[in-house]
Image (cartoon, rainbow, N blue to C red):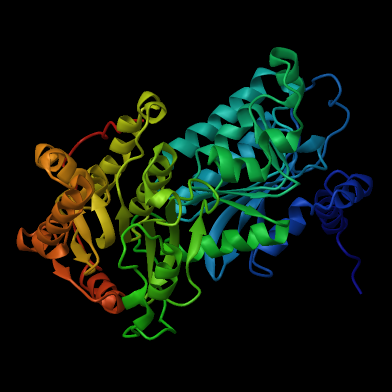
Length: 517
C-alpha cells in the first residue's frame, strides 16, 4: 500500500485546525454561556451537508502588538455558501472564540467577498453576528473594514435579501451593518446592540444601565423598532431566518415564491361575516381576520411587539407569497402614529424591493392627534407611508373592513395611489371624518339651537352616516372597485393575485426619489 502523501495529511491537519476556531477552552467557554459556535450555527441554519467554506486559511496580516505571535486560521469569521430548502445562500458567521469575533481588515475582506459573490449570483446574504466590535489593535484599518461592509449593505439593498441574525454582542459602529439589512432577528438574553455601551453612558450622562436594558432583544423588538423578531433561542432564531426566506425570492428580478396551496383557494369563512361589530366604536381583532383569510398557519408577523396598532408580516394566499399590512382596531383603535407609519413604510418598501404583492386591510380613524405627534413630525412620517405605497410597483390589493377616514384612507393603499384592486366590506366607512365629527362642524348652529342638542346631534349623525359613511357612496364615485361579503375576501384576493402575477409598471426614469426620511 502506497504511503499517503504528507501534503494531504498537512491539508487535513490545517482544515482541522481551522475547524477548532479559538481552541477547545474557548469553545467550552462559548458553550458555557449557552451559545453555539459559528460552525454549529451554520449546521443548524443550512440544509445538511450543503455548506462550502471559502477562504478558511486566511489569517491576520499585520504586526500589531499583542496579536503578531498568535494567528488563527479563518481570522474570526467563517464564510461560504450553502442551501436553505434547496436554494443557494451566501453566509458569514462571526467566531467569538477568536478574539471575541472582533472585526479586522482580513475579516472584513472575507465578509465583503461573500457579499460580492452573493450579488453576482443573485442569492441572499445571511450574517450571523457575534462580535466585540472593531479590533482595537488594528485601529483605523478595522474601521475601514467596517466602512467597506456598510457600503455594500447600502449598494446591495433591494438587490438581494440581506438578513442579520444577532447571536451575541454587536456594539458601536458595528451595529450599522445589521441596521442596513432587510430583516434583523435577535436572541433574548444572549444578544444585544448599542452604539455606546453602559460604561460610556454612565460616564457621560450618569445613567446606570446594563447590556440587556440598554440594547437587548426585547428593547429593540418593542421600543426602538430596530429588530423584526426576538427569538427565545439560537435554534429558533435560525429557524425564523429559514422561514422568512421561504417568502422572499433570491433577488430583485425573480417573482416572490409560489407554492402549491394545501388550503382550499375557494374556502369561505362564514365567521368573517360577523366579525366586525355593528357598533363602530367596538373593537375587533384584525389578527383574526388575517388568519382566516390567508392560507392556514402561514402568517409570519414582523415587529409584532412594536407599534402594535399596525400589523405587518409575510403570508401565503392561495400559494402566493404576499406582504400583509393592516391596522389593529383593538390597539389604539387602529390609529396611525409616528411609529406605526415608520413600521408600515419600511415593510412596504421591502416587499416592493423583492416583488411580494401587498395586501392591505384598512381600518383606521386617522392619524393620532396631539401636540407631541405634530412636533415630532407626524406629517413627515405619514408622508413616508404615502410615498412608499405610491412608489411600489408590485401588485397592490386593499380591503377596507371598517373605518377609512381622512388621511388614513388616502395613505393606506387607496385606489388613486396606484392600487390595482380595491375592495370594501359592507361595514366600510369611507369619509373625511366620522359622522359625529362631521355634523359638529356642518350643523353646529342647528345643533346648538335645538331643544335637545344631543338628540339632534345623534339624528344628524345617523343621517350623515346613512348618506355618506357607507361603501355604496364611495363605490358610486369609483373609489372602490367592488363591495364584497367578508367571507368572499380570500377567493377575491386569490383571483386578483393570479390576474396580477405578471404586472408590469415601470417607474419614470430617475436616479432615485427623495423620500421624506
